[in-house]
Image 1: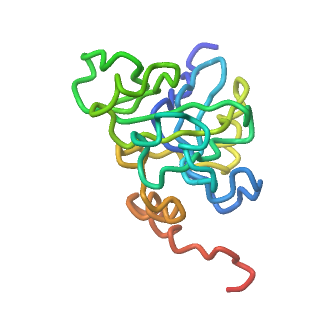
Image 2 (image 1 turned 30 degrees about the horizontal axis):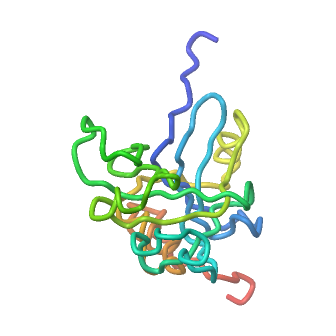
Length: 192
């Protein structure tokens, strides 16, 4: 249609769950979007650590994992598969090391089939995720329009936040304007 603008591509941005999003998979979640286009969207929940140590499931990768060195539940889809993201500082025009593919800025996907020693000393703040969050074409845009998500800028340190249980509030707190006020939203508003 003439005059219609395409929705902005949100790859590399964070989705912060609004207080109205009560789905247990996503309540108070912070999702890093790894891919967003006309075919849909894919991301990982950054603030859902599991009790499973990376060393227990991926031989050789634990030394490269950020603190806490546990597997995170990336979302409700594909829980039997693992993916990893990490930060590699440097220019976006530089391809980055073998075994790492840039997603946005300094954030990229780690090839868990590569030998870990190839990436040792190069990766910063690696996180391993079981599963991911996925949206069909138009679904994410609809959820944002319905007020389920706040799309905000991602900072490289978000990938390896050492206090994932405080991440939702921390990301909201650094926003400007009314969004920052939501960081004080009670866990259970009925007790307020």
